[in-house]
Length: 74
Image 1 (tube, helix red, strand yellow):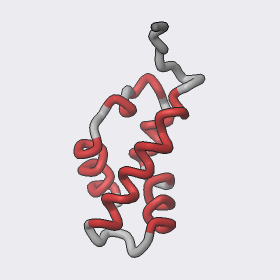
Image 2 (cartoon, rainbow, N blue to C red):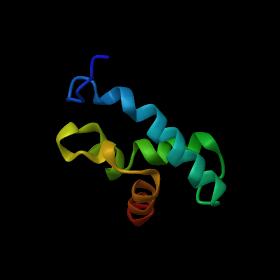
Image 3 (tube, rainbow, N blue to C red):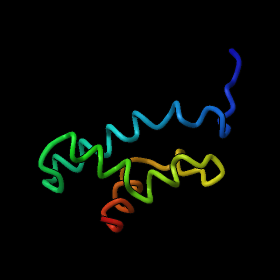
């Protein structure tokens, strides 16, 4: 099986799942009142900006680490 290397051209493929998980956590914890607001909060965050840049390797971080940093930026 061919191994896929993550680079700036394909890192975007990993982001929808990360955004969905973070948004879900925001709603579950009462930080956001609904999913649409939570998704907007994630997309407008500095965490998402870092996720978009492959060289930061933020796409490698787990949900808990990303969520904690997201809360610090809100």
